[in-house]
Image (cartoon, rainbow, N blue to C red; front, side, top):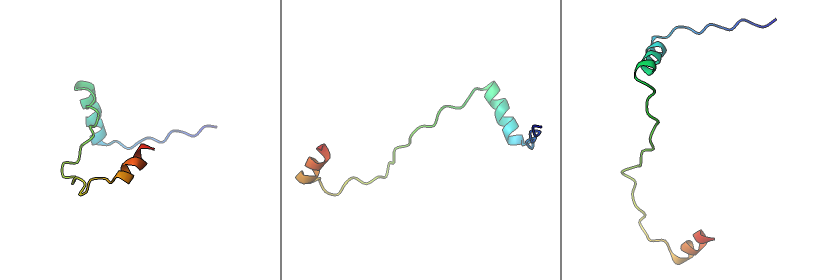
Amino acid sequence: MARKKKLKRFRAVTAVKELARERVGAPPAGKIVVEKKKKPEKHKPTMSKLLDETD
């Protein structure tokens, strides 16, 4: 005999979000944020490093 499915507890947040998705539509997909404060490299790559990367 199959077990009964456990009822999920009512949460107002999920109910409000469901209503908003029906009325307004799904939110836009997340965007990748580029780090603004990323420091540039201190030194230029050496010739040996450049040759190793191409292989």
